[in-house]
Length: 283
Image (cartoon, rainbow, N blue to C red; front, top):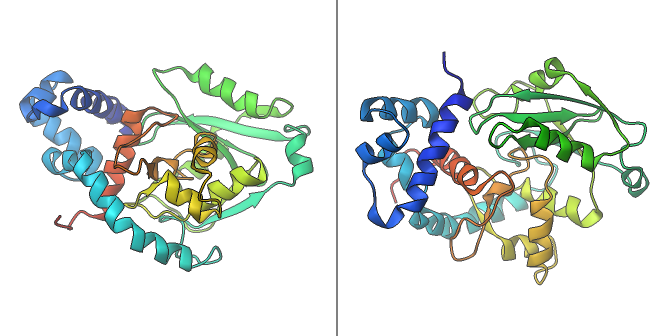
């Protein structure tokens, strides 16, 4: 049986193709051909991966949807933030327990820390998941099969830590990350960053699936409306992709903006979540 990572590799190529030819509005046959599939197989791929038809799914990739999501997300976000950080109804569809280290621990750069890590398939391609005794400390997506690159990124963030390959431990956590496969209990996060970065990352956790927020609004949420550039930098330094949903931050005009794991992956995440959140919504 094909894995979701195998499916995603085709999806990613299709999204790149659509990005390059968006003005021409390519049809199903053309997009299917671009990933070397028949229209029938391409239709099945989308249904298996996204849960809806290619035509409906592709609507969620387009700029019009991004603009619509921005318009409707204000009220959704207000409600989510009003629920408070202690509310179990917050955080997308996971119950996440955040434990931020002290400034002193942060300065130690991981000295005395054992980080267990492993590579796993996901709906958005292969990823590296890493955890400490406190909780998940990193989730990075692999690009072009380059595992060493993400391992280097992990080691760079905690240069003094001990690293142990332990896919059995991280695999148990992986089953609780992707919506629809969640198991009971908290999903603990071990956040290590500056006070400002952690504040931004905690604000990101309040953005529900299907909602998006501009950088400027996120800056206002953390109490510094003029710091959108600094907020953008903190978003870019998010070490726990997807769980801390930095992919839900877009430009105010509705543009997708950049993403550490690639713009195509960001588009895929937003569309994948939107399809599940608004599958019966007409707009």
